[in-house]
Image (cartoon, rainbow, N blue to C red; front, side):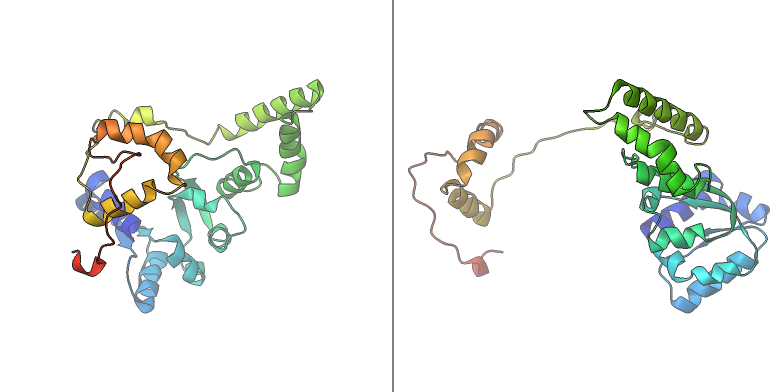
Length: 254
């Protein structure tokens, strides 16, 4: 729900503004927390409208996917948090793939990992059949690329794998737009890291002291104990001669 309201705010306040939207006859319909009947009414308003923007969560869309087959075709589908579509066999991915639309845009702040199956799923969703069927993709790209990365690969297999990786990159870089943190850093406040030492509560002090006197604490204390003690003088010493605190009555501690 928070993403839905955030997108509604971005559209109506930060990017375009309500006046400009209404001036062009564009209605923003945000489906957040609503009853089933209300959701269906909002979806109907969207599909029957000549120009409207619908903001809806993946889960809500999947539950009401049948109602999108009626009325006008969706002109542009934008999927935020698009890494959720990396598995093309999920119910959400299947439902969205079945939606008739002219254009698709995927947005994700999560880097696409070096999993060629997940990469194919997202590319195939944005540009269906660009890389062929899944079997054709495996034969033409995935198999030679993975084989060329194996430790026992021959020089010829490595060269063929690198050539296929370059070919795949040339195709996909025509529609994949990458942005790094260096661009965002100009618009974000500076990062501040602060280490603050707080006095332990009686329960925390008791639990920590008991842990430090167990065999399991030897390794963790030898690695982290000096660091914590330098930053926090109150950090207990390993060879303390003090007796363990008496068990506390947790009911008396607020």
